[in-house]
Length: 449
Image (cartoon, rainbow, N blue to C red; front, side):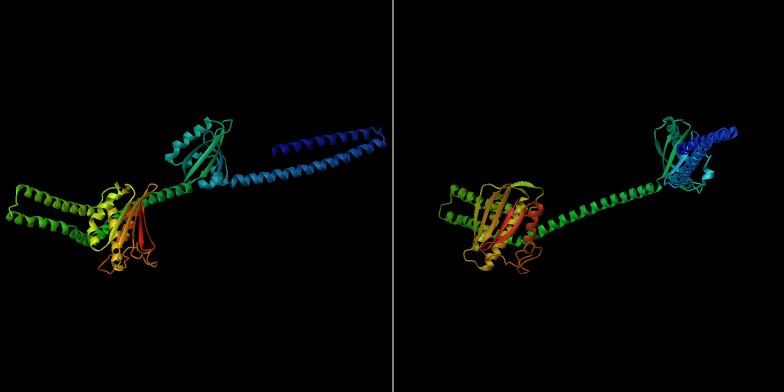
Protein backbone atom coordinates (compact mmCIF):
# COMPACT_ATOMS: atom_id res chain seq x y z
CA UNK A 1 0.00 0.00 0.00
CA UNK A 2 2.92 2.41 0.67
CA UNK A 3 4.34 1.69 -2.84
CA UNK A 4 1.02 2.53 -4.51
CA UNK A 5 0.90 5.85 -2.66
CA UNK A 6 4.53 6.68 -3.58
CA UNK A 7 3.92 5.93 -7.29
CA UNK A 8 0.85 8.11 -7.33
CA UNK A 9 2.81 10.99 -5.76
CA UNK A 10 5.62 10.66 -8.31
CA UNK A 11 3.13 10.74 -11.20
CA UNK A 12 1.45 13.87 -9.80
CA UNK A 13 4.83 15.62 -9.38
CA UNK A 14 5.76 14.88 -13.00
CA UNK A 15 2.48 16.35 -14.26
CA UNK A 16 2.94 19.48 -12.19
CA UNK A 17 6.36 19.94 -13.71
CA UNK A 18 4.92 19.62 -17.21
CA UNK A 19 2.26 22.23 -16.43
CA UNK A 20 4.88 24.58 -15.07
CA UNK A 21 6.91 24.19 -18.24
CA UNK A 22 3.85 24.93 -20.40
CA UNK A 23 3.09 28.07 -18.36
CA UNK A 24 6.67 29.25 -18.69
CA UNK A 25 6.51 28.78 -22.47
CA UNK A 26 3.23 30.70 -22.61
CA UNK A 27 4.66 33.58 -20.61
CA UNK A 28 7.73 33.61 -22.81
CA UNK A 29 5.63 33.79 -25.97
CA UNK A 30 3.42 36.49 -24.54
CA UNK A 31 6.37 38.60 -23.37
CA UNK A 32 8.08 38.34 -26.71
CA UNK A 33 4.76 38.93 -28.52
CA UNK A 34 6.37 37.39 -31.52
CA UNK A 35 4.27 34.24 -31.43
CA UNK A 36 1.33 33.81 -33.59
CA UNK A 37 -2.20 33.47 -32.48
CA UNK A 38 -2.06 29.85 -33.57
CA UNK A 39 0.79 29.08 -31.20
CA UNK A 40 -1.11 30.69 -28.37
CA UNK A 41 -4.18 28.60 -29.01
CA UNK A 42 -2.07 25.47 -29.13
CA UNK A 43 -0.57 26.28 -25.75
CA UNK A 44 -4.00 26.92 -24.28
CA UNK A 45 -5.17 23.58 -25.60
CA UNK A 46 -2.18 21.83 -24.05
CA UNK A 47 -2.93 23.53 -20.75
CA UNK A 48 -6.51 22.32 -20.82
CA UNK A 49 -5.37 18.80 -21.67
CA UNK A 50 -2.90 18.85 -18.78
CA UNK A 51 -5.58 20.24 -16.51
CA UNK A 52 -7.85 17.31 -17.32
CA UNK A 53 -4.99 14.88 -16.81
CA UNK A 54 -4.22 16.45 -13.43
CA UNK A 55 -7.85 16.16 -12.38
CA UNK A 56 -7.81 12.49 -13.38
CA UNK A 57 -4.57 11.95 -11.51
CA UNK A 58 -6.02 13.70 -8.47
CA UNK A 59 -9.08 11.46 -8.57
CA UNK A 60 -6.83 8.40 -8.85
CA UNK A 61 -4.78 9.60 -5.90
CA UNK A 62 -7.92 10.11 -3.82
CA UNK A 63 -9.16 6.60 -4.69
CA UNK A 64 -5.74 5.10 -3.87
CA UNK A 65 -5.70 6.99 -0.56
CA UNK A 66 -9.17 5.69 0.32
CA UNK A 67 -8.11 2.09 -0.49
CA UNK A 68 -5.00 2.50 1.63
CA UNK A 69 -7.02 3.89 4.53
CA UNK A 70 -9.62 1.10 4.25
CA UNK A 71 -6.93 -1.56 4.07
CA UNK A 72 -5.14 -0.02 7.04
CA UNK A 73 -8.40 0.03 9.01
CA UNK A 74 -9.04 -3.67 8.20
CA UNK A 75 -5.46 -4.58 9.09
CA UNK A 76 -5.76 -2.69 12.37
CA UNK A 77 -9.02 -4.46 13.21
CA UNK A 78 -7.53 -7.85 12.36
CA UNK A 79 -4.44 -7.08 14.38
CA UNK A 80 -6.16 -5.61 17.43
CA UNK A 81 -9.13 -7.95 17.69
CA UNK A 82 -7.42 -11.21 16.72
CA UNK A 83 -8.16 -14.13 19.13
CA UNK A 84 -4.41 -14.42 19.69
CA UNK A 85 -2.15 -11.87 21.32
CA UNK A 86 0.47 -10.38 18.97
CA UNK A 87 3.37 -8.15 19.94
CA UNK A 88 6.85 -7.06 18.81
CA UNK A 89 9.70 -7.27 21.31
CA UNK A 90 13.24 -5.98 21.35
CA UNK A 91 16.11 -8.35 22.01
CA UNK A 92 15.84 -7.26 25.67
CA UNK A 93 12.18 -8.31 25.80
CA UNK A 94 10.73 -4.78 25.76
CA UNK A 95 7.28 -4.50 24.14
CA UNK A 96 7.41 -2.23 21.07
CA UNK A 97 4.01 -3.04 19.62
CA UNK A 98 1.04 -5.01 20.96
CA UNK A 99 -2.53 -5.65 19.92
CA UNK A 100 -5.56 -5.20 22.15
CA UNK A 101 -5.83 -8.94 22.75
CA UNK A 102 -2.35 -8.97 24.35
CA UNK A 103 -3.36 -6.11 26.64
CA UNK A 104 -6.64 -7.87 27.49
CA UNK A 105 -4.87 -11.14 28.31
CA UNK A 106 -2.45 -9.37 30.62
CA UNK A 107 -5.16 -7.18 32.17
CA UNK A 108 -3.41 -3.90 31.39
CA UNK A 109 -4.08 -0.96 29.06
CA UNK A 110 -2.08 -1.08 25.84
CA UNK A 111 -0.54 2.33 26.47
CA UNK A 112 0.84 1.09 29.81
CA UNK A 113 2.09 -2.14 28.23
CA UNK A 114 4.29 -0.52 25.58
CA UNK A 115 7.86 0.01 26.74
CA UNK A 116 7.66 -2.60 29.51
CA UNK A 117 9.45 -5.92 29.65
CA UNK A 118 7.14 -8.85 28.88
CA UNK A 119 8.91 -11.18 31.32
CA UNK A 120 7.51 -9.05 34.17
CA UNK A 121 4.20 -10.79 33.49
CA UNK A 122 5.76 -14.27 33.58
CA UNK A 123 5.28 -16.10 36.89
CA UNK A 124 8.47 -16.69 38.88
CA UNK A 125 8.61 -20.46 38.39
CA UNK A 126 8.53 -19.94 34.60
CA UNK A 127 11.00 -17.03 34.37
CA UNK A 128 13.99 -19.24 33.56
CA UNK A 129 12.00 -21.13 30.90
CA UNK A 130 10.96 -17.85 29.25
CA UNK A 131 14.50 -16.43 29.38
CA UNK A 132 15.94 -19.52 27.71
CA UNK A 133 13.13 -19.39 25.17
CA UNK A 134 13.93 -15.76 24.18
CA UNK A 135 17.62 -16.55 23.88
CA UNK A 136 16.80 -19.45 21.59
CA UNK A 137 14.49 -17.25 19.46
CA UNK A 138 17.19 -14.64 18.77
CA UNK A 139 19.86 -17.31 18.35
CA UNK A 140 17.90 -19.08 15.59
CA UNK A 141 16.83 -16.17 13.39
CA UNK A 142 13.89 -16.87 11.14
CA UNK A 143 13.03 -20.17 12.87
CA UNK A 144 9.84 -20.33 14.91
CA UNK A 145 10.26 -21.45 18.52
CA UNK A 146 7.58 -22.21 21.10
CA UNK A 147 7.13 -22.85 24.82
CA UNK A 148 4.45 -22.90 27.51
CA UNK A 149 4.53 -20.51 30.46
CA UNK A 150 2.19 -19.23 33.15
CA UNK A 151 1.44 -15.50 32.95
CA UNK A 152 0.12 -13.34 35.77
CA UNK A 153 -2.10 -10.36 35.10
CA UNK A 154 -2.33 -7.12 37.03
CA UNK A 155 -5.48 -8.52 38.60
CA UNK A 156 -3.35 -11.33 40.10
CA UNK A 157 -5.14 -13.96 38.04
CA UNK A 158 -3.03 -16.50 36.16
CA UNK A 159 -3.30 -18.06 32.75
CA UNK A 160 -1.42 -20.79 30.91
CA UNK A 161 -0.09 -19.51 27.58
CA UNK A 162 1.41 -21.18 24.54
CA UNK A 163 3.99 -18.73 23.19
CA UNK A 164 5.40 -18.77 19.65
CA UNK A 165 8.01 -16.34 18.32
CA UNK A 166 10.59 -15.81 15.60
CA UNK A 167 13.27 -13.14 15.27
CA UNK A 168 13.52 -10.74 12.35
CA UNK A 169 16.55 -11.13 10.11
CA UNK A 170 18.03 -7.96 11.58
CA UNK A 171 18.19 -9.66 14.97
CA UNK A 172 16.93 -6.52 16.72
CA UNK A 173 13.28 -7.51 17.13
CA UNK A 174 11.07 -10.56 17.29
CA UNK A 175 7.42 -11.13 16.62
CA UNK A 176 5.61 -13.04 19.33
CA UNK A 177 2.18 -14.66 19.58
CA UNK A 178 0.42 -15.50 22.86
CA UNK A 179 -2.31 -18.17 22.85
CA UNK A 180 -4.38 -18.65 25.99
CA UNK A 181 -4.64 -22.42 26.63
CA UNK A 182 -5.95 -22.24 30.19
CA UNK A 183 -9.35 -23.65 29.23
CA UNK A 184 -7.68 -26.43 27.26
CA UNK A 185 -5.48 -27.32 30.23
CA UNK A 186 -8.47 -27.28 32.58
CA UNK A 187 -10.38 -29.47 30.14
CA UNK A 188 -7.41 -31.85 29.90
CA UNK A 189 -7.15 -31.96 33.70
CA UNK A 190 -10.89 -32.62 33.93
CA UNK A 191 -10.62 -35.28 31.23
CA UNK A 192 -7.69 -36.87 33.06
CA UNK A 193 -9.73 -36.88 36.27
CA UNK A 194 -12.69 -38.42 34.46
CA UNK A 195 -10.41 -41.02 32.90
CA UNK A 196 -9.03 -41.84 36.34
CA UNK A 197 -12.58 -42.15 37.66
CA UNK A 198 -13.48 -44.35 34.69
CA UNK A 199 -10.44 -46.55 35.33
CA UNK A 200 -11.45 -46.88 38.99
CA UNK A 201 -15.06 -47.55 37.97
CA UNK A 202 -13.90 -50.09 35.40
CA UNK A 203 -11.73 -51.78 38.01
CA UNK A 204 -14.67 -51.80 40.41
CA UNK A 205 -16.94 -53.23 37.70
CA UNK A 206 -14.37 -55.89 36.83
CA UNK A 207 -14.18 -56.87 40.50
CA UNK A 208 -17.97 -57.01 40.71
CA UNK A 209 -18.20 -58.96 37.45
CA UNK A 210 -15.58 -61.45 38.65
CA UNK A 211 -17.48 -61.81 41.92
CA UNK A 212 -20.77 -62.21 40.01
CA UNK A 213 -19.19 -64.85 37.75
CA UNK A 214 -17.82 -66.65 40.81
CA UNK A 215 -21.26 -66.47 42.42
CA UNK A 216 -22.85 -67.85 39.25
CA UNK A 217 -20.31 -70.66 39.14
CA UNK A 218 -21.03 -71.46 42.76
CA UNK A 219 -24.76 -71.42 42.00
CA UNK A 220 -24.15 -73.70 39.03
CA UNK A 221 -22.23 -76.09 41.22
CA UNK A 222 -24.98 -75.93 43.84
CA UNK A 223 -27.60 -76.66 41.17
CA UNK A 224 -25.52 -79.53 39.85
CA UNK A 225 -25.19 -80.86 43.40
CA UNK A 226 -28.93 -80.34 43.96
CA UNK A 227 -29.65 -82.24 40.76
CA UNK A 228 -27.38 -85.06 41.86
CA UNK A 229 -29.06 -85.19 45.23
CA UNK A 230 -32.41 -85.27 43.46
CA UNK A 231 -31.40 -88.48 41.71
CA UNK A 232 -29.59 -89.90 44.71
CA UNK A 233 -32.76 -91.69 45.76
CA UNK A 234 -32.84 -93.29 42.32
CA UNK A 235 -29.20 -94.23 42.70
CA UNK A 236 -29.83 -95.86 46.09
CA UNK A 237 -32.60 -97.84 44.48
CA UNK A 238 -30.23 -98.80 41.66
CA UNK A 239 -27.62 -99.86 44.20
CA UNK A 240 -30.24 -102.09 45.79
CA UNK A 241 -30.99 -103.65 42.38
CA UNK A 242 -27.30 -104.01 41.63
CA UNK A 243 -26.55 -105.68 44.97
CA UNK A 244 -29.64 -107.87 45.36
CA UNK A 245 -28.48 -110.61 42.99
CA UNK A 246 -24.81 -110.65 44.18
CA UNK A 247 -26.01 -110.79 47.79
CA UNK A 248 -28.31 -113.70 46.95
CA UNK A 249 -25.43 -115.53 45.25
CA UNK A 250 -23.11 -114.80 48.17
CA UNK A 251 -25.80 -116.06 50.56
CA UNK A 252 -26.11 -119.31 48.56
CA UNK A 253 -22.34 -119.85 48.72
CA UNK A 254 -22.39 -119.42 52.50
CA UNK A 255 -25.47 -121.68 52.94
CA UNK A 256 -23.78 -124.43 50.93
CA UNK A 257 -20.90 -124.68 53.39
CA UNK A 258 -22.71 -126.58 56.21
CA UNK A 259 -24.49 -128.87 53.70
CA UNK A 260 -21.17 -129.73 52.09
CA UNK A 261 -19.65 -130.39 55.51
CA UNK A 262 -22.48 -132.73 56.53
CA UNK A 263 -22.31 -134.53 53.18
CA UNK A 264 -18.59 -135.08 53.63
CA UNK A 265 -17.78 -133.00 50.57
CA UNK A 266 -16.08 -130.17 52.49
CA UNK A 267 -12.54 -130.44 51.22
CA UNK A 268 -9.78 -127.90 50.86
CA UNK A 269 -10.43 -127.70 47.12
CA UNK A 270 -14.14 -127.08 47.75
CA UNK A 271 -13.31 -124.34 50.31
CA UNK A 272 -10.88 -122.60 47.94
CA UNK A 273 -13.40 -122.75 45.05
CA UNK A 274 -16.21 -121.27 47.16
CA UNK A 275 -13.83 -118.64 48.53
CA UNK A 276 -12.79 -117.65 44.99
CA UNK A 277 -16.42 -117.38 43.86
CA UNK A 278 -17.37 -115.36 46.94
CA UNK A 279 -14.46 -112.96 46.41
CA UNK A 280 -15.51 -112.46 42.79
CA UNK A 281 -18.99 -111.48 43.97
CA UNK A 282 -17.55 -109.14 46.61
CA UNK A 283 -15.17 -107.59 44.03
CA UNK A 284 -18.12 -107.02 41.68
CA UNK A 285 -20.02 -105.28 44.49
CA UNK A 286 -16.94 -103.17 45.28
CA UNK A 287 -16.67 -102.12 41.66
CA UNK A 288 -20.33 -101.12 41.78
CA UNK A 289 -19.62 -98.90 44.78
CA UNK A 290 -16.64 -97.34 42.96
CA UNK A 291 -18.88 -96.62 39.98
CA UNK A 292 -21.45 -94.80 42.11
CA UNK A 293 -18.73 -92.95 44.02
CA UNK A 294 -17.10 -91.74 40.81
CA UNK A 295 -20.45 -90.58 39.52
CA UNK A 296 -21.00 -88.30 42.52
CA UNK A 297 -17.39 -87.03 42.55
CA UNK A 298 -17.20 -83.47 41.05
CA UNK A 299 -14.88 -82.93 38.09
CA UNK A 300 -11.94 -80.61 38.76
CA UNK A 301 -10.58 -79.98 35.29
CA UNK A 302 -11.36 -80.41 31.61
CA UNK A 303 -10.01 -83.68 30.22
CA UNK A 304 -10.24 -85.77 27.07
CA UNK A 305 -12.48 -88.79 27.60
CA UNK A 306 -14.00 -91.66 25.63
CA UNK A 307 -17.73 -91.09 25.27
CA UNK A 308 -18.50 -94.81 24.93
CA UNK A 309 -16.77 -95.54 28.24
CA UNK A 310 -18.87 -92.92 30.03
CA UNK A 311 -22.04 -94.37 28.46
CA UNK A 312 -21.07 -97.89 29.55
CA UNK A 313 -20.35 -96.70 33.10
CA UNK A 314 -23.69 -94.86 33.27
CA UNK A 315 -25.64 -97.85 31.95
CA UNK A 316 -23.97 -100.13 34.49
CA UNK A 317 -25.62 -98.07 37.24
CA UNK A 318 -29.18 -98.37 35.92
CA UNK A 319 -29.46 -101.42 33.65
CA UNK A 320 -30.73 -103.77 36.38
CA UNK A 321 -33.39 -101.31 37.46
CA UNK A 322 -34.50 -100.71 33.89
CA UNK A 323 -34.63 -104.45 33.17
CA UNK A 324 -36.93 -105.02 36.16
CA UNK A 325 -39.25 -102.31 34.80
CA UNK A 326 -39.37 -104.03 31.41
CA UNK A 327 -37.34 -101.35 29.59
CA UNK A 328 -34.92 -102.54 26.94
CA UNK A 329 -31.82 -100.48 26.12
CA UNK A 330 -30.25 -100.85 22.67
CA UNK A 331 -26.79 -99.41 22.11
CA UNK A 332 -25.44 -98.66 18.61
CA UNK A 333 -21.83 -97.44 18.80
CA UNK A 334 -19.68 -96.18 15.93
CA UNK A 335 -16.06 -96.50 17.10
CA UNK A 336 -14.55 -94.85 20.15
CA UNK A 337 -15.83 -91.26 20.26
CA UNK A 338 -13.51 -88.75 21.95
CA UNK A 339 -14.77 -85.60 23.67
CA UNK A 340 -13.26 -82.82 25.78
CA UNK A 341 -14.89 -81.72 29.00
CA UNK A 342 -16.06 -83.12 32.34
CA UNK A 343 -16.82 -86.85 32.10
CA UNK A 344 -18.74 -87.08 35.39
CA UNK A 345 -20.96 -84.14 34.44
CA UNK A 346 -21.42 -85.70 31.01
CA UNK A 347 -22.52 -88.92 32.76
CA UNK A 348 -24.97 -86.89 34.82
CA UNK A 349 -26.52 -85.52 31.60
CA UNK A 350 -26.89 -89.04 30.22
CA UNK A 351 -28.47 -90.20 33.47
CA UNK A 352 -30.94 -87.26 33.54
CA UNK A 353 -32.09 -87.98 29.98
CA UNK A 354 -32.36 -91.75 30.59
CA UNK A 355 -34.38 -91.17 33.77
CA UNK A 356 -36.77 -88.86 31.90
CA UNK A 357 -37.19 -91.47 29.16
CA UNK A 358 -37.85 -94.17 31.77
CA UNK A 359 -40.49 -92.00 33.51
CA UNK A 360 -42.23 -91.35 30.17
CA UNK A 361 -42.25 -95.05 29.29
CA UNK A 362 -43.59 -96.05 32.72
CA UNK A 363 -46.23 -93.28 32.70
CA UNK A 364 -47.44 -94.26 29.22
CA UNK A 365 -47.36 -97.98 30.19
CA UNK A 366 -45.62 -98.91 26.96
CA UNK A 367 -45.63 -102.69 26.54
CA UNK A 368 -42.42 -103.03 24.55
CA UNK A 369 -40.59 -100.11 26.11
CA UNK A 370 -37.37 -99.28 24.27
CA UNK A 371 -34.55 -96.76 24.64
CA UNK A 372 -32.13 -96.51 21.71
CA UNK A 373 -28.70 -94.98 22.21
CA UNK A 374 -26.64 -94.19 19.12
CA UNK A 375 -23.13 -92.72 18.99
CA UNK A 376 -21.38 -91.32 15.92
CA UNK A 377 -19.21 -88.42 14.75
CA UNK A 378 -19.97 -85.45 12.51
CA UNK A 379 -16.66 -83.87 11.59
CA UNK A 380 -14.92 -83.19 14.90
CA UNK A 381 -18.16 -83.35 16.90
CA UNK A 382 -19.06 -86.38 19.04
CA UNK A 383 -22.82 -86.95 18.77
CA UNK A 384 -24.98 -89.08 21.06
CA UNK A 385 -28.72 -89.52 20.49
CA UNK A 386 -31.08 -91.03 23.05
CA UNK A 387 -34.53 -91.91 21.69
CA UNK A 388 -37.51 -93.65 23.30
CA UNK A 389 -40.93 -94.87 22.18
CA UNK A 390 -42.84 -93.16 24.97
CA UNK A 391 -45.10 -91.05 22.75
CA UNK A 392 -43.03 -87.84 22.66
CA UNK A 393 -43.37 -84.42 24.32
CA UNK A 394 -46.46 -82.23 23.95
CA UNK A 395 -45.89 -79.45 21.41
CA UNK A 396 -46.95 -76.68 23.79
CA UNK A 397 -44.24 -77.54 26.34
CA UNK A 398 -41.37 -78.94 24.24
CA UNK A 399 -39.71 -75.51 24.12
CA UNK A 400 -39.94 -75.17 27.92
CA UNK A 401 -38.55 -78.46 29.13
CA UNK A 402 -35.05 -76.94 29.53
CA UNK A 403 -36.36 -74.06 31.66
CA UNK A 404 -35.34 -74.13 35.33
CA UNK A 405 -37.86 -75.68 37.72
CA UNK A 406 -40.24 -76.61 34.88
CA UNK A 407 -41.66 -80.11 35.33
CA UNK A 408 -44.75 -82.04 34.35
CA UNK A 409 -44.25 -84.47 37.25
CA UNK A 410 -45.67 -84.15 40.72
CA UNK A 411 -43.72 -82.29 43.42
CA UNK A 412 -42.68 -85.61 44.94
CA UNK A 413 -41.28 -86.95 41.65
CA UNK A 414 -39.24 -84.14 40.13
CA UNK A 415 -37.53 -80.81 40.86
CA UNK A 416 -37.51 -79.44 37.30
CA UNK A 417 -33.77 -78.75 37.25
CA UNK A 418 -32.49 -81.98 35.68
CA UNK A 419 -32.82 -81.00 32.00
CA UNK A 420 -32.01 -77.35 32.79
CA UNK A 421 -28.70 -78.38 34.36
CA UNK A 422 -28.09 -80.87 31.55
CA UNK A 423 -28.23 -78.09 28.93
CA UNK A 424 -26.15 -75.82 31.19
CA UNK A 425 -23.46 -78.51 31.52
CA UNK A 426 -23.32 -79.33 27.79
CA UNK A 427 -23.57 -75.79 26.40
CA UNK A 428 -21.96 -73.58 29.06
CA UNK A 429 -19.46 -75.93 30.69
CA UNK A 430 -18.42 -77.97 27.64
CA UNK A 431 -19.22 -75.64 24.71
CA UNK A 432 -21.54 -78.16 23.06
CA UNK A 433 -25.23 -78.35 22.22
CA UNK A 434 -28.22 -80.19 23.68
CA UNK A 435 -31.50 -80.31 21.76
CA UNK A 436 -34.71 -82.36 21.65
CA UNK A 437 -37.26 -83.23 18.98
CA UNK A 438 -40.24 -85.53 18.59
CA UNK A 439 -39.93 -88.59 16.37
CA UNK A 440 -42.79 -90.70 15.12
CA UNK A 441 -42.91 -92.80 18.29
CA UNK A 442 -41.34 -90.70 21.01
CA UNK A 443 -38.73 -88.09 21.92
CA UNK A 444 -35.09 -87.94 20.85
CA UNK A 445 -32.39 -86.00 22.71
CA UNK A 446 -29.24 -85.06 20.79
CA UNK A 447 -25.97 -84.31 22.60
CA UNK A 448 -23.14 -82.68 20.64
CA UNK A 449 -19.68 -82.06 22.12
